[in-house]
Image 1 (tube, rainbow, N blue to C red):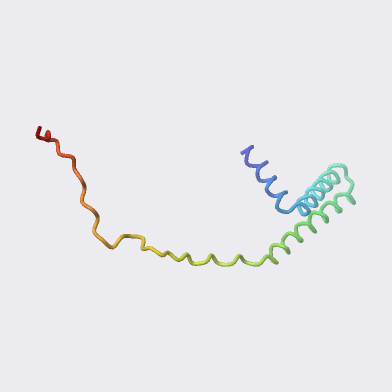
Image 2: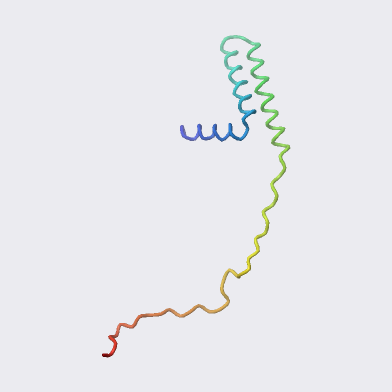
Length: 97
């Protein structure tokens, strides 16, 4: 479990760096404000995190779907139409001298 979290965080920060920084700032401000009874900092942190989350959802809706994969055209059939060749066997008889 410990190895999964850093990998997830790294991939998230690489994909959306601005949103990730705003979310981190908002959550940290809300956490500090909530623990120190500073309600203005708590509200500012929640607002920042909420705006970042809203922006992320808006960008997610704006993404266009990926185009469908093109159909692969094969020039040769997947199986041969001719009969398979017979198996060769090595005779165990000694050749004549």
